[in-house]
Length: 106
Image 1 (cartoon, rainbow, N blue to C red):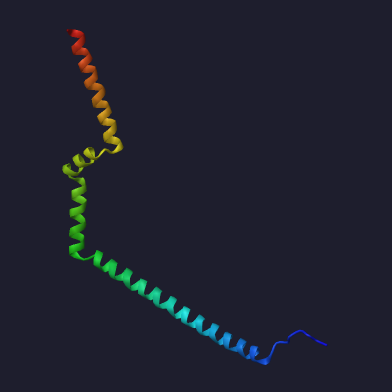
Image 2: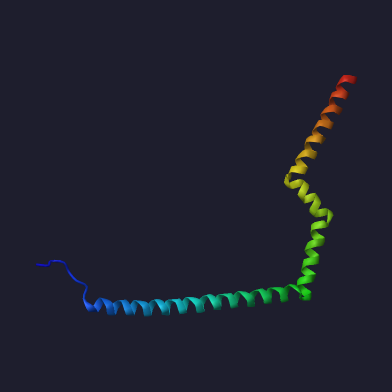
């Protein structure tokens, strides 16, 4: 007596449906990837075109000039960057030397 279950024929039919679904999914995913790539290419083209326009160039030059201006440099010194910390330390040493020299003259 054989007690093991044998696969029925409907499972074989179901496998065929699964293959069809898989192929359909592959086609859909391929089309999605293609559409996504095309959309990214269009976005990049638009960005490049916008960057070449006159208003964008004018804004870029304003930003460049603002970075080079003295006000920006003084703001950097006040913010506490590494370079400004070093200059602050040097100034503190100089003022300490001046104070000690004045005290020694008294």
